[in-house]
Amino acid sequence: MDTNTVYGIIAVVVIAVLFIVGGIWADRSRKKRINKAQEEAKARADARLAAEREQAARKSAAKPAAEHPQPRKTPEAEESADEKPAAAVETTPAIEETVTEETITEEPAAEESITEETVAEKPAVEETVAEETVTEEPAAQEAEEPVTEETVEHEEAEPAVVDETIVEEEPAPLEEKPEKPVGKKGRLQRLRERLSKSSNPFGKALFNILAKDHLSEADWEDVEDTLLLADVGAEASEELVEQLRRDARVTGESDATQLRAALRAELLNLVGTDVDRRLEAEKPVASTPSVIIMVGVNGTGKTTTTGKLARLFVSEDKKVMLGAADTFRAAAADQLETWGAKVGVPVVRSDKDGADPASVAFEASAKAKETGMDVLIIDTAGRLQNKANLMDELGKIRRVTEKNLPVAEVLLVLDATTGQNGMTQAKVFAEAIGITGVVLTKLDGSAKGGIVISVQKALGVPVKLVGVGEGPDDLAPFDPESFVDGILGE
Image (cartoon, rainbow, N blue to C red; front, side, top):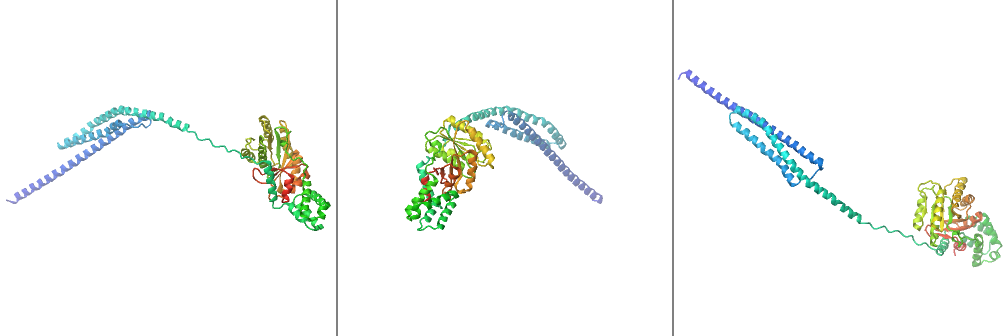
């Protein structure tokens, strides 16, 4: 073989190899393009199916939501809803099979076939989805109807539960019955015991001085100082000392029993045993309702004394009403209403603070007369700053009350521990409204007791009631003998 023949064979082989390689490369390129086209067609078909399913789901959900909010689906509706994705899944393999079969044929025809199949499949898929949507909506509506009925049935069943709740009535709370108050006899005994336990009864100090064998001038000065320290007052102290000096039994005898008897007689004389200390409401000829006006400065226990006095009358089987005319002090009416609940008596009050006290007193007197009460007790304000306002306010209360009922008593409440300072207050109130009696509070414990004598001398009215403690029954009618025996420690 010559050289040219060899070169020719080599060239043919090289060309054949190049042709084979080029064919293989071209074939692979065509396959890649076909696969890519298939994937794009499949992706478009999947996206289209997903969009159509979402649109159909929105339409089917919007219609029942307008008619019945959030109905529950029955098993039939759930099955029909599950058919949608099944149909979509079945459609997708059909597309893939068509594309695959077309790929087996000639490559150019495959590309055209893919394009045609893609265009042709759009309406088919849309028609299928539309048919499924139209077919499923009536089924969903039919499935919703029993759900609505069930909902109505449940709503109609609910009132039965409410009825059962209404039928069950709670037991009515038990009303607290007021405790039975202590009678007069028990209160007088308590007065004597409390005074005998007092930390500084001046009677004991006087007895210790007078029990000496011989009384010097200094001893008599000690007697007078003891009386002054006990708030007996200068005039009453001087009178008592002079009476004891002139008493031959005291100056000439040193027997303890005789000295105690003489001292007791002189103290009873100063306190006064021939004075009628009964309240008008306790007298047999008293007119009803008997009106009592309570006066005094704040802090003396005036409102508390009003409640205790009502309890005292209740112990005597009297019908009592309270009038809360202290409208200036905060919670004064509430305090009196609390006492009324404890004692079991009605209370007339104003609904607002700072109301006209006279109007409350007028309303209380009218109601007491209308309801046939035995006693009406009116609590008044004690926060008046000057004498003119005091006289005007208290005078107005009395005048207005007397349009309905006569005022039987005006009781001045004094704190026994204030001593001679309380005397100034007592005189102002006496001039303003004309008091008929005195109530001494806090006479136990640190109280000196001599104010009983001094206040009666200064005002010319008797002490009618005394408070000897904080308990509801610690208000007693003043009894001179029990008082004197208490301060002498007998």
